[in-house]
Length: 293
Image (cartoon, rainbow, N blue to C red):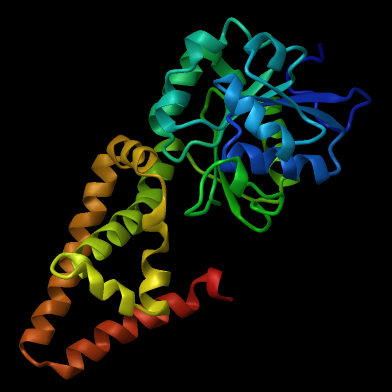
């Protein structure tokens, strides 16, 4: 077993173990297979039927429902389950993950996960969150290019081992991500605004549009489809995410309500200048955002 934190440039071939063969875990396995990393990939599914379903999509990977088999000679473990499953996994995984392996994750709420897994694995755990996804879910939606150009936010703390941090950076870079770093609390505050709030708003928009006459949705064009696509995501997972980050999401909802109230007042008063200024400010912010360049 290599020492903690030896990078991928050494002579030893690495074993990467991914827990969860869904959209994120499956796409990560496919991305790493096509990367330049010298590695073997094992993927763990909670049930045999899940492993059986994933095998045709992950040729060349070991896909198993046995933790001992998945973690044999593991150098890096990547937890790609639901936020609650990641947060609570430490005590169970301690029995299986080799003592020198580095652990990271792909959870979208970081503060609770980092606190829990640092308690289990100490400086070997470094949190991460790739900002990539889809309204589709499951291994059928996985694709090797999912992370290409996507930002991955890495959330080290003062406890993080420098070599573990280096390995986690290398892993997500190899998957195709552009890296950013911030502490877990900063992550949860920022992602509440740019990921969790948009999902809540999309769900609210669908409900608002269809509340009286659901059949009118048949008339919707690209604006409605683009604005509400993410509302098609898995409801159980998103309920976990919104509840886990409920304080920051609540702050975002309050600010969104304030913005909508400002627009509502301008409309009710017939103030064209105020309406145009509201829309122009939003347009300028959107156009100047790096994602639009």
